[in-house]
Image 1 (cartoon, rainbow, N blue to C red):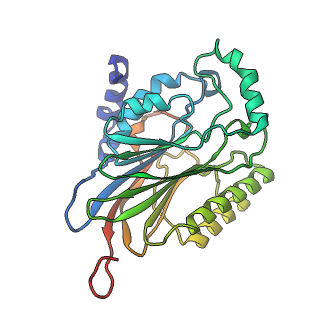
Image 2 (cartoon, one colour):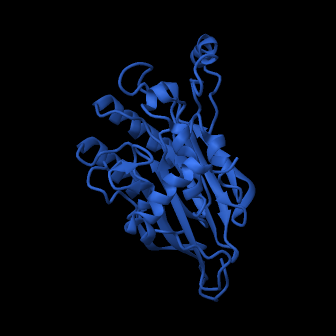
Length: 320
């Protein structure tokens, strides 16, 4: 399925009617010269819940999101729970990889069985979910079966304002290789929501799990970590947790983040060089093509960074 006339009107307003959006288009050059490869990366929480929870019709938004995201070399999505297949249909030149599934925790299995009869009468309603995260990579960059995914296994609760246990949150890793042979490990994640101390402690545990996974990988590859961290810098515990995560892994902030004032800073894209791959941020910020004046395609900002990726050499001038 491709975008229909209704969606065409939406993205025409987004792209043509918003001068700022036109300035933010990614400029990927795959393949590139020996000076390296330009790599454009999008990270976006697309709020893909069933309509009653999302408080709108996500299916109406998803084709436009997928069409816009298809211009990036890599797209990392969070909360694609019910609409991953709709996004995939709009990204024919990309390899799509989903995060972990629902798992076999007896509580989750029981909840699935109890809810199944209800889901027959409610379209796009199939909790409990897996991680709800996915990475789409251009076919020219994909490395076959170079994938890891792991659930965090800790969450705050089943009921209340966040009810994060309905999703088995975790992280996923996808390895990519540029035409020059430079390799990068991409990590996509979605951390616990909530603003109380318990939620802050859970996010710290989740980042520790992710940090240990990154530390276990070879250091030759560069690393890019994106996603919805649900971390607010106005909360001291959260700020300290994120800064410790960055110090531990020697990660830099790419500068990808919201430009529109009313967005909260919860979404980040961090990176570091490898011993054989170097990353330089050429441009980063908010992908404003997903926003049209006071209307947006999700309740989160779409953030992006454009990197130049090069293979590094040792003292003898040989590629490491």
